[in-house]
Image (cartoon, rainbow, N blue to C red):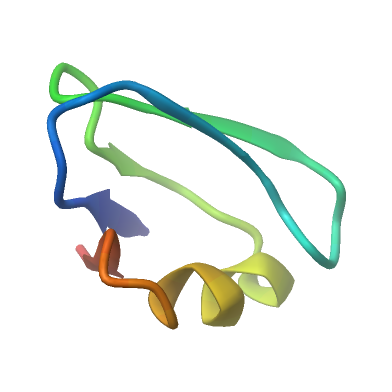
Length: 49
């Protein structure tokens, strides 16, 4: 589970899985494929939930 730390909606595509994730202030916490989590956590926009 990752938490999006910003307010603006964002759509990201997992580098490993190719799966699309849509995060927003209304839906900041979502399950993310383990293979995609490391790349997202390397940014300042996500942290572990």
